[in-house]
Length: 113
Image (cartoon, rainbow, N blue to C red; front, side):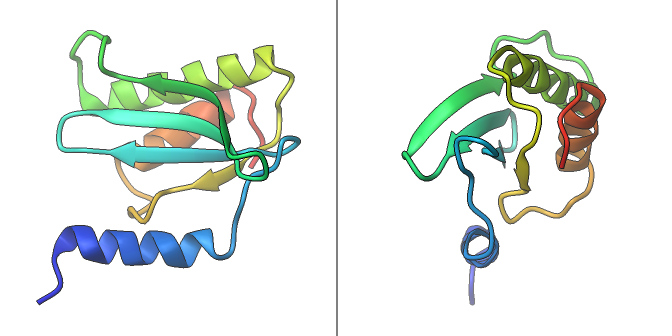
């Protein structure tokens, strides 16, 4: 039987075959564990991370509020680097809950995708 992690990795590979980030339009990548969320802007052409935020040092509130705050933070960081357009990579997770909240926060912050 295929484990949940392996299924997610398979879905992520399928998604990544279709999308990639450039320096002009980086990939907004979301990773979530059972406790924390990480959001990164990645330039796949150069293999570099342009910006990164996580909830490791944030005050523990409701997860949905934290996720939306992370979206706003990454949008603010991207704006400082003159990035307005990104490609959203949900990382093999459903576009639901925390992943959706990150996307909505990033859109509110001014990112276009």
